[in-house]
Length: 429
Image 1 (tube, rainbow, N blue to C red):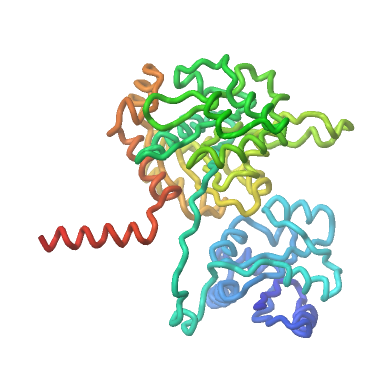
Image 2: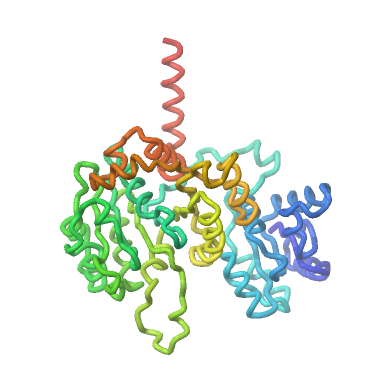
């Protein structure tokens, strides 16, 4: 395995890993990755570090508060390079966990222990390849599977989680897909109210209770869900009082979402903002957890849509909560959406300001933007229907449609080839 050793005085460790059969292609200081991502080192050194990370399959990194950043993790993720964290204390293990790095190795571990951790890691899927490898591509590349369970999360402050969950479900249902819209918010459930649905019915809480006793199946979900007109969306309403949160336990929610995965083509789940685990310090280890539903959905989801308010306060709240989200979901893909974009709150180049801020302080390179559209949102709230039904050509609807097509239900290679052939034939005609 090709390895980069990012450890202070790491030459001895590099020699030991070489004896264990690994190919150490570079030895750099522990802080080199942070300095390279922050452009605080000479250009030639930056290129050397970035090239080494891109060509490696794993980075053995000495973890401290000064050697870890979201930008370092994002850089390794883009290169498909895994990180083996070396931690000298419990505090450094917490730092690694905050950035989604699992299975830390003690800093003073024997080289064979570090080698075993490297061997246990899965082979990277999309790292840089050499020219010889590019000349011989796979004969039949496979398309990545579409995310079946999509969790819509956002920090505190009402960035628009429920609105985006409703509109996303409506857009994914286009073309005859069967979509489930689930309200798993244990703090402020609102989907039933926004869509004018009765929240006194069984809903998601009943599905969770049935899942616990093994009585939940596709037929039962069809019985307790509420169809949203003729859109193809079926809604599992949330609890009608926040005090009912003990009904949504971790095991119940995980079981219900697992059945939803087989029931619908897509399952869009609206969750609460809080990711706190303060209950774990109490003596009642078997007691209910207030945020168990949110954490269970995020761990089960195939894709997390993270919603940030496109204003200084919303972006600040998002960046403070984003490390907690990453520590919760690990390697699950995240699609970041900046909602309610308008120039009044940010001034000139509002889109660029949000993009640069998220990239610099969160290592988030790809962001989708939704414009503020109060007229269409108010009309939908008045009619208790999705915005796509009330204003199908509104800027917000078109932006959500673009996001759904690019980030979730992207066309496959065969579909893109078919469209290209049709466009060519149309031009020839």
